Length: 117
Image 1 (cartoon, rainbow, N blue to C red):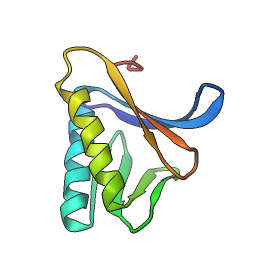
Image 2: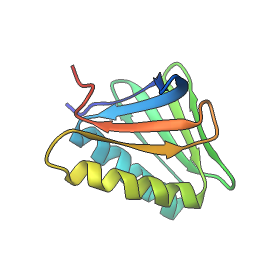
Image 3: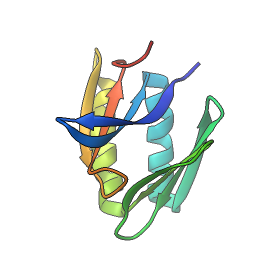
């Protein structure tokens, strides 16, 4: 079963958001980001949590609700995100990347195979 989870974290003492996954989960996220870039929005569900990826002008925001995570990103952030996700999926081992966002923190950490229990 694929894993893709989002939680509050820290990055060098500052608030951050951590999105951690196995490769299958990161592939699902990658597909949703590609679809949102092309169609304006996309969603997928893992572990009863729906992730909605929405293309929105001037946005770089992640909103966590009880059973939903809403990713609002502009075109530039969607492209930047795809450029960060693809090497994580293709890598032979665990890894992570960082993306500057607006809220709820200034940093999003994307991780593959590092926090999976």
